[in-house]
Image 1 (cartoon, rainbow, N blue to C red):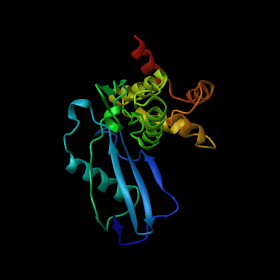
Image 2 (tube, helix red, strand yellow):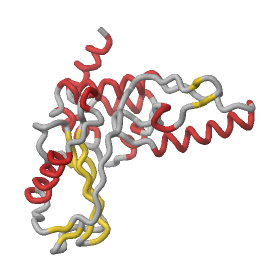
Image 3 (spheres, rainbow, N blue to C red):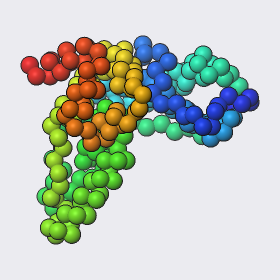
Length: 216
């Protein structure tokens, strides 16, 4: 989008901005400036599984207009390009082997359910596939996902489904520290159990209630 007045700081991107209505669904906004008058503004919301694939362009545009007007103070702007997508999020383990075929990407469950990110996972997976081909002559000798990471993602999805307002509190607690590195390491599934224990110590108690429900 382009604005009539300079409103963006091109050196400061915005991630996980929850200053948008949570009444429709758990949602947040990204703002990635390209200059003082141009930026990519993305509205992301979580939807229950039975509504996935159902287009909601009117609702999404309304939410974006509200954010631009009330948070950024932008009323005059031009939309230069628009796109939308529905990304399935699941914390279930995936059987990637289908006969002689190996599923990759989204179909392989490489989209991390707690963030919607997949790039890092796909890069690591591609390297593992190449190593398996070189050493074993087939692509199937791949590391299994850690059960605890699947549990963490499933717990977050459970919280989003039951009480979407908690999502902001969880991310605020995770990033409430001098460096984002421990959190990013955790989201990339490269953290150790002691490191994760330190992160979880700051999380709201509602998250632990969700973990308890998943173990019943």
